[in-house]
Length: 169
Image 1 (cartoon, rainbow, N blue to C red):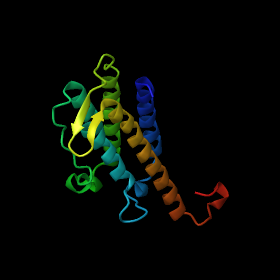
Image 2: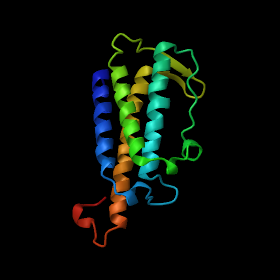
Image 3: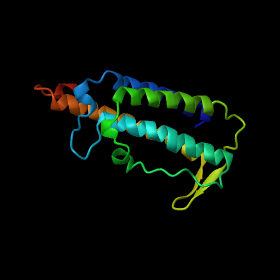
């Protein structure tokens, strides 16, 4: 795929995430279909942190100096360390949307950037700028799917009518 198309997808995904989350009822924000699953609040906290500290930061680092060590991240530990369940949902959603806007503004200045650069990851080997950008889009899609599944599970758990008329989930 070409970079402008990937930028367009990142912009569209921000809009989709906003639409999926903007109208949640207070009871839905922290609702989980199972204890080990994430709620909407945890998902948006994760997206907000990843936007700032993973994809944009690591892509910037690789474009600027592929030999420089990447910023350290620990997404598996962030929910507990950063007290995701205590965060303000609407402020975090707004923060994610602001960060996505900053990401897109930055990406749109990268026309002459060295897109062939690759970071030599100690465990997975070379990680190209193309791989980072494409996986940024894939990461969005993963969490959009997660949010859709969460919304469906909430509906299923809180209705007294069968949902099979809508089709098989």
